[in-house]
Length: 307
Image 1 (spheres, rainbow, N blue to C red):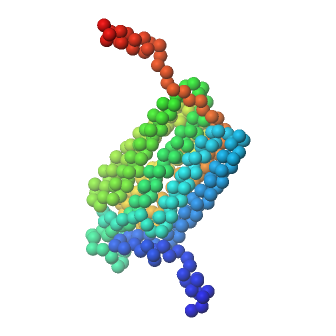
Image 2 (cartoon, helix red, strand yellow; image 1 turned 90 degrees about the horizontal axis):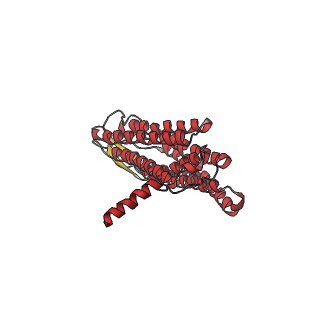
Image 3 (cartoon, rainbow, N blue to C red; image 1 turned 120 degrees about the horizontal axis):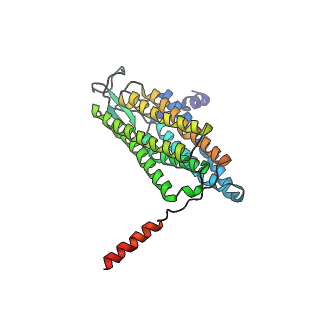
């Protein structure tokens, strides 16, 4: 065999040859891995672009809007986190085998003796979502705050912390709920799915109130934010068709999640960063002050306790 033929034969995607999916009936194939490597490349290129912009803003800090420097941190971290996630995903790493509840999919020959077969569950993507979503929520909140048509005197730092804390904890809750549900093989896996969906409803109610009522976001940005909230529910649908219902193959699952991640972690952060840079202004937050009546009441209580 010539050296050129040997090179051609040894090149290409060999992830599933090296990291073989042992002990599972339904797993990603070379085609699915190829798609995941493509997503890996997208986030890799994006990370390089954001790093270059970040370095530029640090060097030319006097010529850069301060709000842009703060907003840039979120898409930069997201791209780095997702870059790492898709490296593991495409390399067929960070997974475990869980017996499927439903037998919608069939494979021949069957590898395991389980009734409905064992499905490959990639838990690594949930771990990275736990890191990525808080960054996106921070950027979304910062965008709304910087575009607000209200006077900055109406907003306090504690209000911002409170809003972000509730949104981040609620979002982490539904991500972890889907992870736990995916690792359960019985029909009880749908319990965490329901819990996560209910919490997501509460989080989005808060987001709508915060962005559309308090900050009064309007126009195209309002439409983009609303669309992002709809896309979030597609994660629940994808879970129901894949890890939950075993209705679609792991390759289709990878494509589904990949498209959603592209929308939420590539397009959406880039749009928010552009809007903040073009139209946003640096907010001036304050700490909440106690009013005069509260102070008088405290003084009276202290006087009574002394007596």
